[in-house]
Every structure is written in structure tokens, then in C-alpha cells.
Length: 387
Image (cartoon, rainbow, N blue to C red; front, top):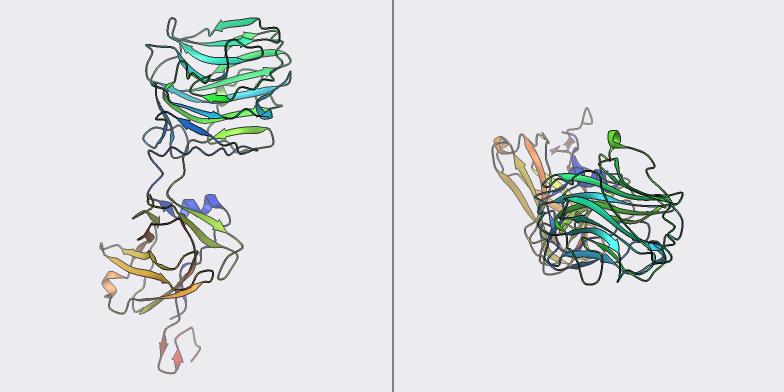
């Protein structure tokens, strides 16, 4: 019998790797919100704001805000100083309570010049913009339509050609023309609040929040073409919060460290939280009948038996192998003895899985070249007609 591939781990990018090997833990309840924008700001998660996988617009999760002091903030930075140029602030918002004013986002401090806040106002159940121009004159304008509860809304604040516009679900709701702002202050950028006092904190969920500088991403009604997936960052994207958090165990594509081919599967397991988490590739149908041995190559940045390779067959049984990394910084060949497994329990392998057995430290794994070797009978190799 010829060499039989279980998985050569040839995934050309992270998206392909993560689609193939799905994590069992998407980081629900976590408090880390990475910025995937052009700069990569350090995000502070205040109060009890957390990653929530139960509700989201796109991706695997959103940010859950409980209305009692929760917020996300990024430090003061030139990225938020829009000057007199074009900019866009947009995201998806899900409001669950209308008994108090609720801030979507802003940079506001005691009615200072060139600051602003976008909020939900409880007196009329509409969005409202507070915007102060360069001489401290405030514009306070409410939206035309009611901002409904318990559903996702796309909200965009856009300035272009000295006009400030707020869109809700692609429809123009507020227009200030002329705005005459020159936004350049020392206030942090807040999401789910608008100042250091955490005034009017948001209650509900926020997802796919983005700040773009130097570009007006919409200048007319776009209700017929609302964003339909997660954003990708570009040179104008200065803040991008997918709000998916960081899974304690996640797979990635690796092109530099590999045992063969062009790629290996990189797995990052975080201390404590990744214990017993799995990466699983499903939807397979691999016949290992009459096979007695499998081979797998694993490299890790710490030694020990910290990960397990697992195969699941269609009749409900597991073939497991605890992987002992005896030396770091090099690929270890792992032999998986399946000679004692009946053909009935290995004729239809439907899943490949890797499980974290020990998470007492952060660990990076590289997994490659999982296969069943040629079967040798006597002095002959059963491979086509090579006798």
C-alpha cells in the first residue's frame, strides 16, 4: 500500500488554517480586544466589558457592555487627530435598554474645542451628535428616526468636504454643514463611552468597530449595500476591533518553520486557559484499514508531553497518541501504533484533532506531515508494481 496522506498541513494563510482546524474555545468571556488596524493600538478594557460568543454580527464574537462602567479605550494618538480632513468612524451596535443615555463612542472632555460624542438619547430614543468646532460652538442634532432596540444597526460618522454626516443602516440621519472642525486634542478614543468619567456607558453589544483617517468611506445613502462581512485593514484604517478576542488555542499558517512542503500548521496555546482545548479538522473520510503505523512531525518551544494527537472514526472511537517532545527547536518524528486497532474502527476516520494536555505555560507548536507510510511485506514494498 502506498503512502497515505492524513494531512500535510499545506495551508497558505491563517484563514485557511483556521477554517481547517477549528478551535473548541473562541475566548468567550475574555477581556483582550486586539486592534487589527494599521497602527495596532493598545486597547484598555474597562469595567466588565468582555468577549461574548453568544451574540455577534460577524466573526466569532462581539464586545458585551453591561451599562455600568464598561468601555474600551485607546490612548491619545495622532491617528485620532483628523484635522480638517475626511474621516470615518463606523461599527455595528446592538442596544438592549432605553432607560438612560448611551454612548456609542467619542472623544469629549468638558465641552472642549474640536471634540465630539455620538450617543443614544433616551428622551426621544434617537441617536444624537454632540460636536464642538474650533471656537467651542456646540452643534447638537438628533437623528430623524428612532434607534430601535434588540437588533443590530450599522452606524457611521463621516466627515467630508466640511460636512459631518451620521448614517444609520446606510441612511442619512444627521447632517451638520458646515462643521468647521479641526480635530486635534489630547483625549483618548472611547468605545462604549466618551470620556474618562465613563459617562452614559453603552449597554448591549458592539462589533466590527473601525476608525478611518483621511477617507470618507460613504458620501451618500448606502442602505442597499451595507457591510456584509468583517473588514480588512488598509492604510486608512487606524483602529479595527473585530471583537473576536483571542482564543486560548488557535491555528495559523507557517511558511518558515516546516518539516516538508511549503507550510506547517502552527498552534499557539495560552497558559491555563487552553487546557483541554482542541483543534479539530472534520468532514474527512480516511480509510486506514490494514495500516499499522502512522507518522507525525511535531516541534514545540518547550519539552514534555503537552499535546495529544487524536483520530475519530465513524463508529465512535478515538485513536489517541500523547506527543512527547524530547527536544525543543526541532521537529520530532512521532510514531502512532495503530496495529491493535481493528479495521472496523479505523476504516472511516472522520476527524483529526489535537488536544492540549498541559497548559502550565504558553506554548507554540508546529505540526506537519501526518501520514501513513508505505506498507512493507517481506522484502517487497507494496506500492504499485514496485516489487
